[in-house]
Image 1: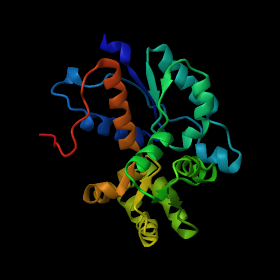
Image 2: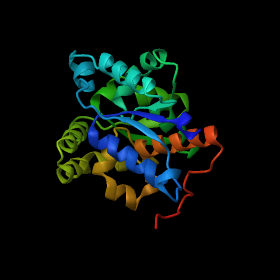
Image 3: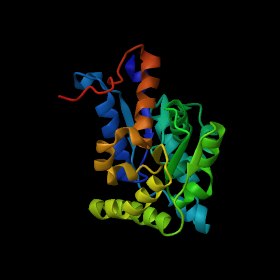
Image 4: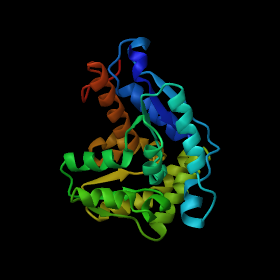
Amino acid sequence: MEMDYLVGVLGGMGPAATADFIQKLIELTDAGSDQQHIPLLVSSIPDIPDRGACLLNGGLSPLSALLDRLQMLENAGAACIVIPCNTAHYWFPQLKAATSVEMLNLIDMVAQAVRDAGFSKVGVLATDATLITGLYQTALEQFGVDFVIPEGAAQQAVMDGIFALKAGATESARGHFEAPYQYLQQQKVDAIILGCTEIPIALAEEVRNRPAYFVDSNKILAQAVIRWYERKTGKTLLRPSGKKLS
């Protein structure tokens, strides 16, 4: 039964990023009816303590809340669990060890997508916490990919853009990303990883105009979920590249 392959989404970090992931999953699924889409169990309970505040300033750890949500999804019948938040993957090893349910690692899948695309040098737009923990640096180094990270005012602009998006100020957020975007282009990178799941929302127009230049972490995760579901069910659901929704 297809209900044996429920996908659990441990979201809420933030709500807009979770919604963006689900929307991309829907758009990338080559379904002709409601019944052909992938069944989801979604936790978008946003009171999980701030990941950045914990890692950068010694604030309250989100691990206990993450474990609670993980257990809730497992108890509800999830057969696979994903987390559409890059920074939260700092706690991925503890979460994976606490469940018998299969989990897909967003960071690893983005790094593998970069390697598979043949990029040798990429820019990384991500939160301060994601960068200070070396999540992407470690994953990219394992695949032999060089990387460039914005510094100083450019990185502060990234954080300002992320916080603006979380507050619902999408247009303001987009403006904040102009400086770091230009900075990375000047470094002659082959592509830019959107390593915070809020960023693809703010840069949606740029991504539409140059889809091959941006590595959208939410899109990569959505594709991974579809491939997982295909392996489990034997169906072909990943929308062919270039095929448009009618």
